[in-house]
Image (cartoon, rainbow, N blue to C red; front, side, top):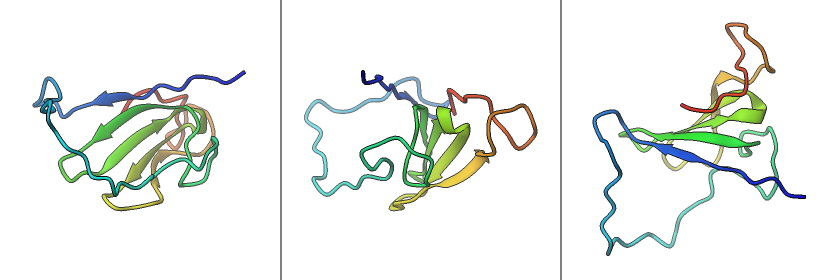
Length: 102
């Protein structure tokens, strides 16, 4: 039985919604920055991602719930950098407990 995964998109505080024009076009040359066909803990994998944030520099931050970490991808990167947690589940200063949001 497969488990559904969800990803919630957050926008900067100064915006209240995402305004994408109905006739917007998208680049066909996008890259996959996370996920290689299965959940995992490598820096190019996620395991139950829940929260997503994209800043003004196009840096992506993901709350990787089952890996208990927040992962950052700079624009153009194919591997992320753990910027919070990633040291097992817990309440220590270096740990997170199933993060759901960024």
